[in-house]
Length: 60
Image (tube, rainbow, N blue to C red; front, side):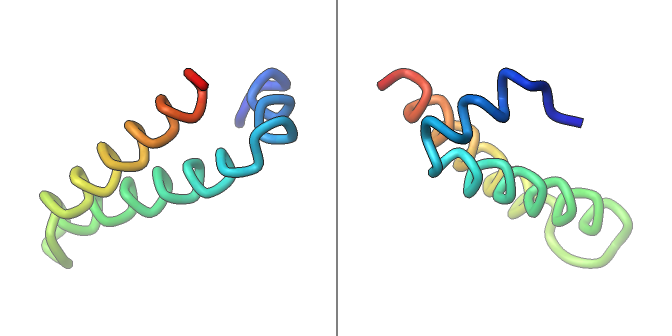
């Protein structure tokens, strides 16, 4: 589960909720691609994109 600090950051920066859900979707796509149902490369790209967006939000 996420820490209390992350929950505080989400309240201060609501866009981080989108980052969290984007990372979860990326994980699902990656695991689905590894299992043969989709593209694991697309899942990695989604995770990397949302990770960079979250990093940018946190550094504002």
